[in-house]
Length: 490
Image (cartoon, rainbow, N blue to C red; front, side, top):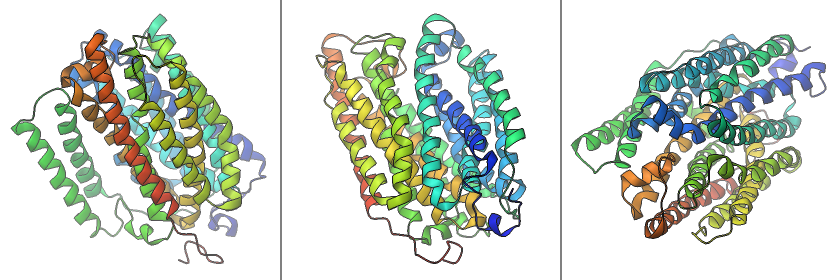
């Protein structure tokens, strides 16, 4: 076994043939699976949560955005804690916090409690997601990491499938609280297995937590997102302008402050590595373009098409199943030919998927939804393992945790804004309040209103398509890592 501080550990890779490598991969996949389940399963439960807890329409959106926002703000910092105290230790701590947050969410009694407990759950999710990539890098040599990330993508796809199917079934037949209860036994079992299987391999390093960066970025994103979500339910007024302006100012403060920090939240020096900047930006624009797709399609199926949550969710399962099968092959391809071809091809395929979704109408066959789901799942499974592998291969071995956290930060920034951009664009053809109600499944449309709303969905999908094209261009133009030198040397 490789111990911290040895030459193998400093090289940034464990052994792909280590006895604990296979079990370690299973543990990491479980972490990705459970967080993926929680991301998709809550979407279908929003209407029941709103009705049962009497959550205001403008607040229920923060059940999702609050979870994503805290992961975005904490991603790099908990990755840094992994470099300081051990990636496996922080990964296991994240599981415990996630399980505790899930238990609390299941017991929530009002809007403040459910949003607050989701934030606690997001803290645990940040520890898990930010350190999972670095744990994989410790388990596998650089030349095998693409395949490892491909297997890891199976965990995400399976989690998304389970989230959709279980969410539809639980909301329809049981209670929304069980979407959180199911995390508890799975999380406890994963923690027990992780303590027996995973060992810290990376070299420890002293880091400083960037409090100024976390506060300015968190409040800045909150201000902008609050303004955008308020615009989905009300007209522009002074308070919305104030939140928007304040958020922009704080984001500017964040950029200036980061340039003066000895150990900033976002280590901008990593962007000087040829493959790093386009890889991170490709992740941001891919998240911006793709994260809202699930919500838009669910909105279309439950709104104009009038399907139940369970029936709507089943139409999306084939895409995730196909994606889980393609992920490992895409990872192997990235190991052989590099990240540019599979990642860019995957993004191009996702462009096609968004264009398919943009053709949905009141008379479209539901097979078109299935086709779009399969195409989208195929593209995503080609992009993620290749792009993740490119970031981790380009990272200095001692900064794997920070690089993994930066990757999640860029992707999550895209994801949280994807939600807001999509609903604002979709609401252009119908009243904002009604569009938002359909978005969370609290009402449905018929007749000319349904046709108008579908037109708004088309505009949203075309907008997201433009972001996906930008992501593909960034991926295609990324540099190649220099041969014969390590990232640390560069």
